[in-house]
Length: 352
Image (cartoon, rainbow, N blue to C red; front, side):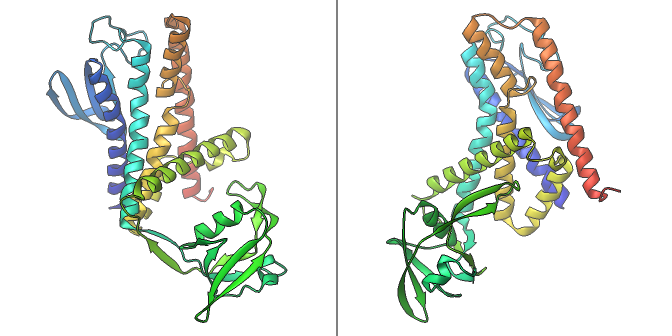
């Protein structure tokens, strides 16, 4: 069941991506010859309005084949009025950007759904206090519920962390203890910590950890757009930072995961519940959007780069250059795919 859910999720994300390309292409009067979910042998086809809609055998991708544009043959062009080739470069860029934009939009909508269903967060209850910390010196105790910091009401642990980082000087912390509210003053200290990439960083700390108790935060109608936007931006930033760390060598290529990892994680998320599945689907959708915008020939970002070059220089790249760069792009992408699958198999077999 988990594998089926994973395939459905991937197919849905691909459909949404290609739908973005399709709708904007049709808006600009470009004839779409094929709209396919999946690659390889076509197992179902239906022609509607001169466009062939199909499901293909390998459900790990998809494509919109526009008249005058073919990634398999960059030299295949058409100069008909309804061709992609004859549209102004800025229109082509918008068509290309529409696919990744659809992924970001889908992630935003999924985060809206998550926020309306309820997000599980740590309650602002202190669980552990570190020795020789500002919290211990100020008199904070385990099971204290933090109700206010510097005049700001606290509802969950995320707000505690945020206010500590934003503080400038002393913190006035109000805690509920045994039915009464006490006010304590303390000075945060800048300490070292290890981030998710294993790097040593510095941030303000007071020496407390959450108790592990959780609450469910349901966002109101007026709060949902802000929540969804912040989560979409946060996911995008995390993926971009991960790519940066990969290029810098901070993250090993061995950490790359492929389709097997996606299926595994999606199966686990579906078993954990609808909110977890939506959250993972949103993250994968953002990931698809970001990766497709990378300036790699054969990806949307590569085509955007070519069209931007044409806008600036007033001339298109030569067929020889297009063919060579696109071929290099495919080699790079196939190599990356092979590496990610190898890593997946290596992890599954525990390196044996």
